[in-house]
Image (cartoon, rainbow, N blue to C red; front, side):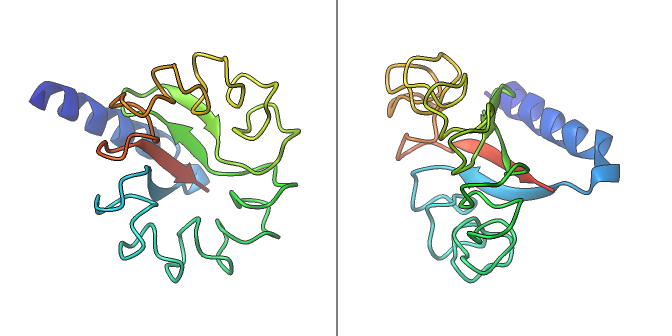
Length: 149
């Protein structure tokens, strides 16, 4: 277990360090867990609060505004936050854009289809099941990592 946590931490730090030139921002964990400190569902945490500048729940911030190109809530965004599972698997973009091929809102795309194995919308898959540790839909799990620019 400790080796797995170390591997995940190394992956995230390597991903952030290797792309430091693009100034990536950790936006918390996309999770249904309202008690986890880094969860976007924790209304009192720094990543779930609607007042936090880097929260996808802040309607006036860069990542939550319906007008920002890097927002999860803009239906026309092309640079929405990226989602990575705890095991390092890329799970697409947390985006309201139904036409973006990498969007979780594109029901015909690899990351938004309810039948795709890499979709957080596949309730029977590893990344969408409410019982999987790698799923943001598990109310007791850590969820997936959100990375923005």
